[in-house]
Structure formats: structure tokens, C-alpha cells
Length: 87
Image (cartoon, rainbow, N blue to C red; front, side):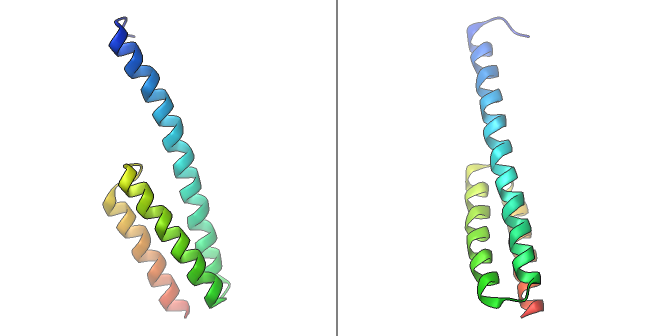
């Protein structure tokens, strides 16, 4: 472990950022799960609402750098494909 002040501060910041990103990823996983469940339930209106909210969350995660933009695109594409397959 480094002993100079800037390295100690960087370590503190990395711990805080890691926890913040971990919470965001947990929220994202929950939203993906609920969107998939809504699509599977064949209630089209609820599925579209869940999809819209989940896509918004995915875009926010990608813009903040929590997930990669290609991963965000992959999630959105797979969700939309599921919706059109069940519609």
C-alpha cells in the first residue's frame, strides 16, 4: 500500500467508486430481470413500459461508464428482440 497522500486519496476514491458501481450494476440486473419477466408474462403494455424504463437505465449506466456501450447495446437489442418475438 502506498503511503503518500495522493495514493491514499486515490485508494479511498476507488473504494467509494467501486461500491457505487456495484449498486448500479445490482439495480441494472434487477431491472433486466423484471423486464424479461414482463415480456414473458405476455402483457404487452406492461412489457413495453418495463422495456422503456430498463432501456433508460441501461443508457444511463453506459453514459456513466458503469457498463461498456457495446454491452448496453447488446442488452437493449436482446430485450427488444424478446419483446418482438412475444408480441
